[in-house]
Amino acid sequence: MTSETKSFWNEKMTHLFYLYDADRDGSITPLDFEILADKLSALVGQDDIKRREDYASARKTLCQAIMRADANKDGKITLDEWLDFHANLANELRKPDTNPEVLEQLSERINTTFNMIDLNHDGYIAKDEWLKTCQFFGVDEKTAEKSFEQISDGDRLEEDKAKSLFLEYIKSDDPNHVSNCCLCFL
Image (cartoon, rainbow, N blue to C red; front, side, top):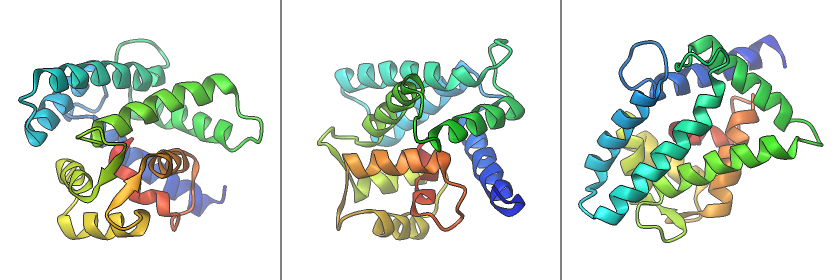
């Protein structure tokens, strides 16, 4: 990595850290996932008990996956732990013989994230689902629409393509890579 691309990668991972730090205390804890899930449930109108239970299960899975970054096991992830964890993850993903356990753990995180964004569980992310999720994370509508146009096939983002983009987002240090449109999802 050049110093420029490393700087870009650190900036995007730092931004991602602060998206998860819902209570703005400078660390990511399980409480942050509860705050995010409650806000997201309200945003998408989770009146359905089954869907609310699905979200609770997804929140727990996502929390467990992301809390792996807690290197000192004190129950919170600092920015330094987050950056170290994701740098190691990105380096592992860049290897031609990526550790299957790492891929499995990341796949679980990506699958859970996809299922939370695919609000009606039809197997793809529709433009309205994308826009709602982007708005939730503070992305303005015009930027959200433009990013959806870049990565979608018309009015939908197919599951395989979305998951591939999520994976690329973690490992790519290219400021121009299309996966950077996925910022608000991991």
